[in-house]
Amino acid sequence: MTSRRSSRFGRGDRRIGARAVLSAVAALLPLPMLGSPPVAAQDRAQEEELIPLTALVRDALDERGLQGAVIEVDGVVTRHVTGEDGRVELKLPAGSYLVTVRKGGYDVLVGDLRVFEPGEFMLDLDRAGDVDMRVPPKLLVRVVDGDTGNGIEGAKVSIVDGGSRVTNLQGRTEFTELELGVARISVEMIGYAQRTEPVALHPDRTTSVEVRMSPEAIELEPIVVDVRSPHLERWGVYERLDHGLPRRVLTRRTIDQRAIVRLSDAFYGMPGVRVNRRSIHSTRLVARARCTLSVYVDGFRWGTNIDAVPPEWVEVAEVYWGTQYAGRVHRA
Image (cartoon, rainbow, N blue to C red; front, top):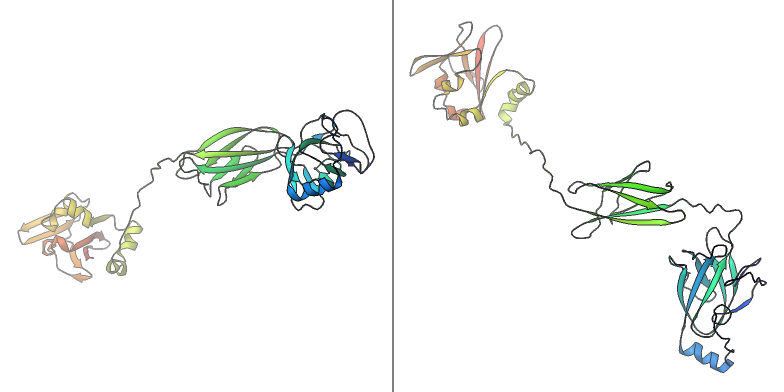
């Protein structure tokens, strides 16, 4: 096969004009020349079977196999793309075909291919003089669960000096325009142990990496649930507590923890408040200025006997003062 100007075939420097006729077996491989079969036999072969062929696309200068070269055969819908070694398998009926070969950075190669029997043929591509062959590498990353192998969506993949990406539904993401050398990729995902690995990048190549993540138990702060009484909300108790006022508060939790029998017992040790028990039926709360605190339950005054309020009624008790002392008890 030849380019529209000229091209090499196989080894050596032999150049031939455009649209040269090539045998898939005899012209390009060191096999003995086999004569063309009779027309009738050729027609029968086309009807009966497909002939397997192997095409090797190489760089004409260094004879390196070229990955990603596209071979188009006239009359055949399928396009054939070479693998890492520059080879690709074709199956064609016996006959003659117009073949076109394309590869980024190289001249287009066009020529005739005559197929007789199974074999391999080489196609040497000349580099295009006005194209920079130093193509930046590309990195494809797939993040999967180490136990199931399923892709992990939403994982953060980072490269030093290369930015960050988030994996898609299949656990995939990609990086382009990278510098050559060794890139360090870091993968983070909640519920998994973080991984950091070096990856070697090569020019004019796409590097594919699969990162398997190990599940890791994460200790999170406990969720605090606060169920608030609409009655206390209405009286503004929570608003005062949220703002740190009053500073002397008795809550249901304290009453339950201390197994309070008489409500006055819960106020022992509260700063600025003294319990004055006159009798078993009369107990008052006294402030430091020797002022007796009035007791209000749900906004209604209950006098001064704090033990008149059963402990099981109390959701929260506030002790505060301004020009006078007062105590308020709220039921839930």
